[in-house]
Amino acid sequence: MALPQTGIFALGTPAHCYLEFDLLTGADPGPAVAAVAGLTEPRTTMGGVNLVLGYRPELWSGLQPDHAPADLAGFGDPVVGPDGFTMPSTQHDLFCWIAGSANDVVFDTAIEIIGALAGMATVADETIAWTYHRDLDLTGFIDGTENPALSEAARLILVPNGDPGAGGSVLLIQKWAHDTAAWTALPVPDQEKAIGRTKSDSVELDPRPESSHVARTDQDDFGDILRRNTAYGSPQEHGTMFVGFAASRTPLATMLESMAGLRGGVRDELTRFTTPLTGAYYFVPSVEDLALLDPTES
Image (cartoon, rainbow, N blue to C red; front, side):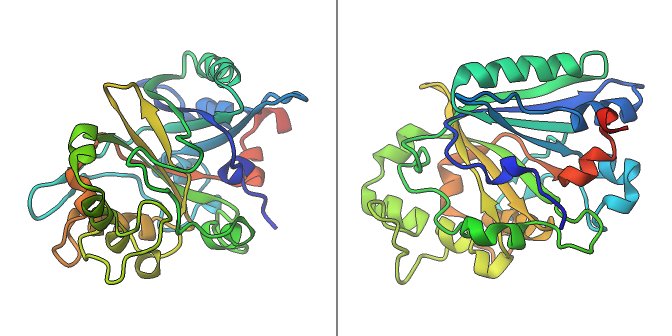
């Protein structure tokens, strides 16, 4: 059985850093891809970090065509709803997610990763993030209520054994800025209608509003996703890092279309209080597939 990158499922880490890189113009992608594949987590008895490493889908498919799912594709075009609401495409080449027990170990690891790619790739986006009150997002609602249990998640969100890229996963990463003043001005019942759940205990509303976030992102309609969202930013500028894993691009892409109002003509009410700033897909290969490129394994 192909072994997935364990950081996908490593819950309970409060400190996070997301790094996206662009290859330098004219650079040979092989060494940069190999450098990322060779990255390892520092480990100590008191706490280390978890790494999740991803590649622009077309980049991975070009270098490892026998180990890439057939439907891999990057975030090539923005998602534009009927009313003009837009989710931008900001696709980059390489992705590193560092999650740890404290900001210092995450910071040190990020510095090392940037140094390892010096001369091959430049940092295109850097975001420091954290968990908010353990399991809430910045709306004050519990996040990830529909996530599969970890005992089932691997079966649902990894490329199946026997398929090219087995043990890997497709990652969607988006940065969403929050209009906190407008959101907190809403009475709680109106917030609950926008989310589609009660705020205190995350019970789904019955009936649920069709424009609610729950209705527009229902996994029963679009397929299984594992959400690993975090909060990011400062008191003045902040929001949510959407971090979603799936066995293929399809459930993630159709979910975005639904949120924008391209499926059924109903736009996600939560998008009236949040603004997407970035959008990219990455393929997160299995440990075995990473080892094919790891120079330390040769």
